[in-house]
Image (tube, rainbow, N blue to C red; front, side, top):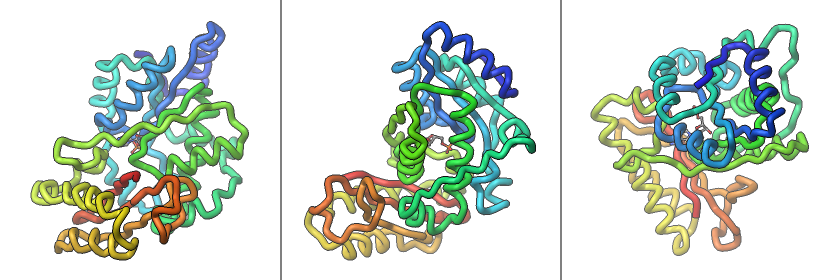
Amino acid sequence: MYQFKKVIDLQHYITTLKSKGLTVGFAPTMGALHEGHLSLLRMAKAECDISVCSIFVNPTQFNDDSDLEKYPRTIPEDIAILTKIDTDIVFIPPVSEVYPPSLDTTLKLDFAELATVMEGAFRPGHFDGMAQVVNRLLDIVQPDKLYMGQKDYQQFAIVQNMLHQLDSDIKIVRCPIIREADGLAMSSRNVRLKSELRQQVPRIYQALLKVKEMAPHFPVQEIKDTFAESLDLPEFRLEYIEIADGETLQPVTNIEEHKSVVACVAVWAGDVRLIDNILF
Ligand code: AMP
């Protein structure tokens, strides 16, 4: 596996590969890699000639300094695990390479209602920072295909919309959510859960399965109330549950009227914020 820290070196290598007609599949990550990330890279490897992973904890998408500070960083382990699954390239740039002072990387796009609901409502500025870094990384890596997880459903919808607005040729692939055996969606933040809470958090997925089961038969509000009740524990704080159109992400009132519907949730378990979703 080739490792790069500098944009110029990575670009030079990728240009050589592309001039030989090789295709590039790219999965951007913030590191502390787990099976969810690896599933993206395995898919990139299966569908493209070259798989590229970036590891960059992007400061512009954190709306909370202590969250940024506490974000797990495990670069040596990440490199070992990427080598093991035969990833071709890992790009681990410092902030100064992604955001050089001489370059204006701000993205002037409007994601309208896609970005005002759910995560957008609770994490102001988060999606602007996320879109900014994804756009910058795409400029650097120049992939043919971009692999992102359904785990961050709204993030995926916004990046898809960004590519559309930019008239980009890059194909975006949505990869399914990878879960622990007990149903907890894998996340780099899970390592921060204290052991008693770790035992409680699979309730989130259990409650989402219940939401899916109720969906065809019950009014939306009743479904949301049932979800909230099943997480009514002192250690949990439900930030939101939204039942939304799978494409526009706007709240639905009548599930039957929509082609795809997604239930998205954000739950605080102690001081760890978890998100999850289910499509139906
Ligand atoms: P992150 O490192 O959290 O920024 O995530 C990098 C990419 O991995 C994003 O496209 C996520 O949606 C994806 N991802 C994170 N967790 C999972 C998971 N449990 N299953 C599938 N994809 C995931």
